[in-house]
Image 1 (cartoon, protein in one colour):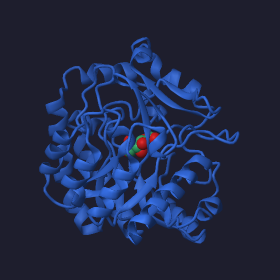
Image 2 (cartoon, helix red, strand yellow):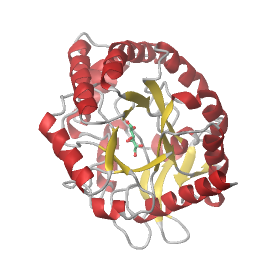
Image 3 (tube, rainbow, N blue to C red):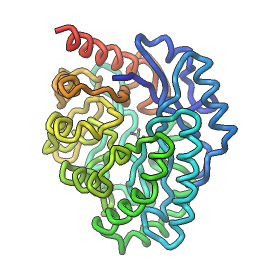
Length: 353
Ligand code: DNO
């Protein structure tokens, strides 16, 4: 496996590349250009500059998380072909600069959703949480304000202002789009981009819905093993692959993560490994990566990756805020670095036994 660390760029990430490089056995970053409006083609000079900066710090730039998906593609609007052509061009450009995997999602309107971004835990650390009862009290049109009030001023990945400024319009547009329609629209997108991925040496890796159930009545199509099977079947090629995020996928206890790794392992190109504590129906908070702190058996997950001979990219996922850090929710340095050390420790023990 190749360990990488999510990084939002020097303009936008308080964690310097130098610190990331100092985490033992770190190979590279999962990068993005957060200021490019969703759907627009990524400028060559920006991609080149990002790669140069990352390589200059002794790290690789082989993973992008994410290239945002224009809402018209998800909605299957007539204009989608123009947006897909832009996506294809971004894929070509990223391929030329050595990117191997693009992580993306196909969640309507919102990317990940939480009801708290700094829930205080008994040890004094704080973390992100989702509580079904709390969500029910939030007016959907207030969720953007609610997330942004909790964000401490940081850009939150997937919560781009230009899209979220037209929330009412988007909710109306999705009234006529059911899960099957959304899935068909994903299939349409994949059929158009996989040939470009093949030419460009890039594998797409869809991220599970976070959380893996409908939020505010919007359709969700990447929340179970059956959903994965349907998505992989749209184009049965390695370029149509998965990001398996344990924290998202595992927040529904019916999702058996080791079983999913065994079944779909060849198509997993990016593993996001983290832990969560499930405390009720559709209710959880994020914990340290350690098995003992959460509801997921992280050892069993890593052992299954080892058993199948996983050679793809791995990253620690959301960390808590510990040791007084006041970073971007989920993406501070310290707890994620502890997560890396733990995952690498498990991996070394598996390699040597
Ligand atoms: C949140 C992340 C997501 C993820 C996207 C992938 O912290 O897990 O924003 O990167 O859903 O497209």
